Length: 181
Image (cartoon, rainbow, N blue to C red; front, side, top):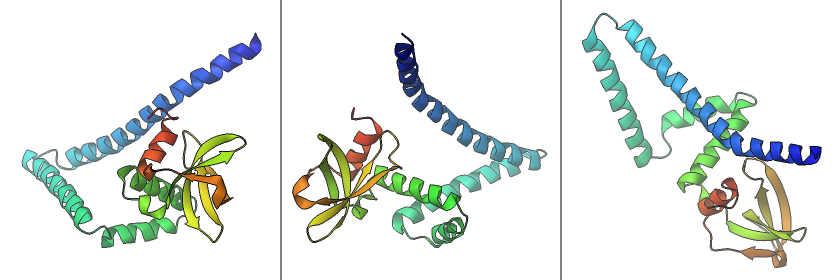
């Protein structure tokens, strides 16, 4: 009876956890946007023309930054930002993992991986991302689900790997969605 209650409690947490994380992320970005807006209105409260001008300039800067990123993915500003973040212990790891995940979801980070494969692990097939090819084996990253930022890295013999025609982005979506998508 108690085991059943804890089982249902755990399943309930797994249902609510993604929603709670999404609400937390949205609240975080809402706080940042709200702070910027409050700052601009406090600084320029006496003149609506200055307020509108600041927001128009911010809008144009964001459009221009998007254009530069689309045109040249190795922008100097991004390189400087990456350099600064790389010097902060702890933050650099989180930043690089998030950056890699965004690249993979957008479809532009898949070039780091040689493909998606199914690996026999304890009698079950699991999705893995081939990261390096060696003479008789592959290095395969097997992510945990639904959080693909952690997992295990295995050196798997060639004959134990079934390569798939799935894209890296689709494989990652399958991992994050718990196999639903």
